[in-house]
Amino acid sequence: MKIFKSVLALSVLLTMLVACGDDSSSSVSPDSGASISDGNESSSLNKDSSSSSQKSSKNSSSSVDKKSSSSEQGNSSVGDKSSSSSAVELSSGGVLHICDDGDTLTKDRSKTITHYICENNNWVVKYTVRKDSLDSLAAIEKNKEHPNMDSLFAGYDGEYFEFEDPRDGHKYKYIEFHGYTDDIGSHATFYVMAENLNYGKKVPLGTKDFDDNVTEKLCYVDDEWFCDNHFGGLYSWAEAMNLPKVCDSVDVSSNDACKVFADSARSEEKARTIIWQGICPDGWHIMNKREWIYTNGDLRSSILWEKNAGRNTDGLAVIPTGNGYAGIHEYAYMWLPMADSITYTVTSSFTLSSKKTSIIRWVRDSFQSIRCVMDANNTLTED
Image: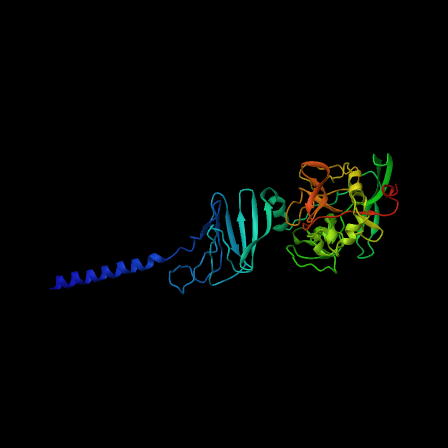
């Protein structure tokens, strides 16, 4: 009888151990992560959660650990917002389309890193960074390093003059540019700023609502040091032209708010030589197409460019200002007072592959620099 009782007790104990083992099988490791495939790459969502287990109960909440998983093609991480639950749903195509407003997502691809933000429960692109520009971007954003600008104007043998903007007291170097032009078959001269304009109120990167009554600018990586140290402000086309923001996205000739500009640039020749003040100081205008083409020489500064740095022999000291998020050391774009189509205009372009300025089409609601030219003593406008 004693032997029988012992065997019975052992059997009950074994049964309880097996039951416990089955119950614990629904536990999810905190390091497991959640992978979501869109056919080309995997994404991993990061959310703060009060629970590390995933249950099938209707009232339970699913959680995804803060650590992100990765694949050979890319990985993504979501954060910046704490939540006790995470609603993650996929469309039939496998694309993430529901999120909590304010969350962020970083998607790491082979050549780019794209940052998203959740708005109205859907992911929208905030900005994209090329990986080959991360060295300079990391130095600025993470280490807060600023480039040495001491030799920006080196290489120019002419005289630099100084102009003080009476609106804010900001001082700019400017030069007398002169040379021969085929347009009028003789030499011509004009005075042009050797620095990008830096005027207006700084607003954060990603701003969508602009005040038409105030001149607003962006600064590279949201750091006003760049605006104040020769990089100047970055403006949308309409902002630079001192027009309402709507003029970035409409046919300027069909909108009353923009028509004053369209009337001034109503022909190809007028658009090429237009004298349009925009947000330049009184007595100055935004450098037009004819003036940019005329200065097609050694315009690059001898510093900051990763490739094809200039010698600044012509004095304009053009630097690679990037687009606000990336591109410092790589490219610079400067608005022209022209509206090419409903959403396009033209810009003066400097890139790593071109030593001289190129006139190209560009969307008006991007953010670029401008140079100002003095209205007086300009023989290009006197013919």
